[in-house]
Length: 411
Image (cartoon, rainbow, N blue to C red):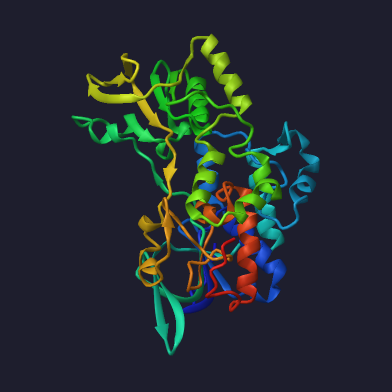
């Protein structure tokens, strides 16, 4: 946390302090050490990876889905070296780092790169492009009313808005908000669920973690998905981490085609073999029901429980409904990018912006990381590996700010 007074202006503002932002900062300092003191990092928490840690803790996720070579340090083997005295925290296959191990390693990275006090406790509410004395800046409006000027901005704020099924808006009566919520609002650590019957909707790994956590607390869980359960180690094939698949993706010049490739590669949600094994075991023990090819048609809150009408014709009762339905990325509705897109409009394909080669909104020095950079990075844009790929594109532009600013390179 940085408690020193905010400067009125700065060269670079990085919004967000998650794993991708940390990846960018370490690579930037390694590539261009003179920029170490020329950037500001803004996050409401005031510390690195706070939201990431909270999300993993709330769902009691034991380990990451990415192998140990994917992390915020520029040295791909740094996490393996850090884990030499803790080999039991690298999970098979492929050495998946335990959550606590990864968290401790990221603390080590921030200390090693002298970044502990680089995050300002501030929430950015607006990014407004302005021109002063023939120079372009971004005016950052903070939640407390302060205003900061930055010549360049990187938006690394993570996922999109929770995706809520249409039937939720059609529930005819009021209900306790803690009895139906999106997975982002569930904290397993705070719940007593003994004897409850819970419906978890969604076919991804989040639904699996919620199901396992609820069963461990004495609940009976129904997991419901619209299609057959998919069992995969990773959310996208490993070929998307390198040229095997990306070479063809980057050669594709049609943005709509790239969008279809991304959706096909991620192919909705999937469960890891380890989680699937635990859920099948719970199903044999009568603690879980795996209900695929099924959807909720209607839900009603009646006499302190949910009455759920399903597409298979059944009407079932539940104490709680959890929506593990993911998030939706739409740059046009991103609150921080509204003014930037007004002054620098760009093509948008299914919610994703067409950025330049360095992941800038064309014509300005506003860079995007995470899922919003998927048309350029590929299907793993939101993952740790995507953060590394994004950093490799952004850092050269930050060290040579005039490079390719008005170019519209396709890759």
